[in-house]
Image (cartoon, rainbow, N blue to C red):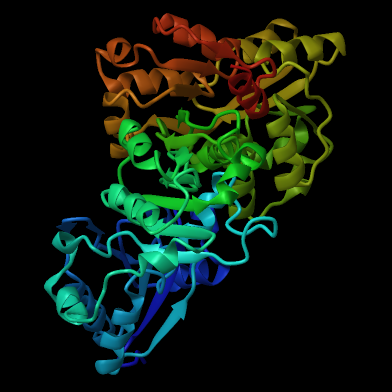
Length: 516
């Protein structure tokens, strides 16, 4: 029976990189019924809570979707409905995150709550910019300060009343003596911050840096001195959200700048693979520093189970069973299990594959040895390999693959004198309904650097989804192709590949991007 009162978990979302959520935070998101998230919480974290209602309560300077009082009331209302609520807060809930006020409101309402700390931007953003916030040669203290402290226009009435008569101005003379300072949310106040520190004795030559969108592929770092930082940030047109670090540790950036030196840092790459497959390529690209936009163009659906099940029941009759994709292996496994079969259904049939990923899927998903997998990952190469081994004439072949697979391999086997060639579509490839909203705006704004295509169908579908003027919309964007067949399709679409993978797999595709 559901409790009359729910519970609220105040979870630190971290500084922007979704990989920096804590294990506890991710686990709570997975069990959440409601997620209340703010402007600095990466929306990708909502993938941890696929069944939860997501409520946005973002607040930016002078632009609040909800006041703090309304957020407090929302948390109480949702918990009083007996729901598990995760309040996802950028950074750490208690470091300029107003988590303390939310806890006070929950306590007054008798709502149980738990606080899960998060990695705060003052530590993470400098680390990703190559700036250690402490170093024994330079400083033994590190101070957090809010840059909004004097921006009265951005404060809610409730906040102004809290601080009325409290002497809220900072002790600039004390701050000017400290070795390392971190100012949150201080872009608009930067001229005043730098001026006050210099006025109270800090050396204007002190190294300083402002980091925008720290820990994300959009990160941008401006390094200057205390005396020149405000002008440098203005010249670079840096806007919030940003973090400013002032101290000698900033001078270590040339030695420790690991994140922004990654080969694809600052590049926006579109992945057009199926939703089920996109993550593997996306992870590799993100590890190289890219901003990845997933725009699936293909939706995979199981084929007609009647012919599939009949073919799987007769696999033991064939000399060779051929898989041309990892997807085919996955769908075969699902039908085997659904019909009460397992790997024994293959009998003495040998296994042939196209591509290392397909061969690995056979070993992993079916626990079977692969007997033939040519070095070149195309159907032509597999046909040649069979011929070289004199394994065509008089042999029986079962091809388990997609409905749109090229007929070349089937025809090659038939022409070579095969006794039987049964080509069974395990799955159907459908074009997705539309491209994601998250792609349209960056595409229109000219922010996309690379499009990646891993098959002919992804290329054709992407062009179709963009519309008749797709060539105009893609002008100036570089294109990466996984291999010659995909490249041929791109050229038929009048889209010239910028690079083509040397090995026709994901690793080869990623390497081709790194070389550019």
